Image (cartoon, rainbow, N blue to C red):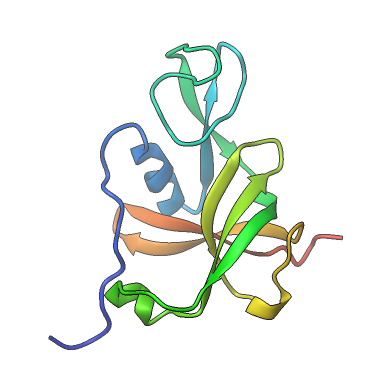
Length: 140
């Protein structure tokens, strides 16, 4: 076996499939309840706020701020072992829920809580991509 190990990919089934498929188009979407207008994460067929099944995917501008983060310096996973060190963050989306993802395209020494970030996408397969976050160069 030669070459780099393959990235572990999420399964494209259940309610979250819309998230991964939108990412393949370079779009960040989040589930929002049409009954109470709350956005939430993790995707599910019923709103965790009011219980309604009137849930839809809405486009989000992908901007937010780092709520907390950690730098991973070792991993037993073959793919992630080749990526160390890397940052994983909880990103509080502007007008949305909090998502966990990787921080990319930045010096790990400059990452800080409150840092403004914007979504970017890494191709994962033909019909999906992985949303990640990078520093928002347009942030003030």
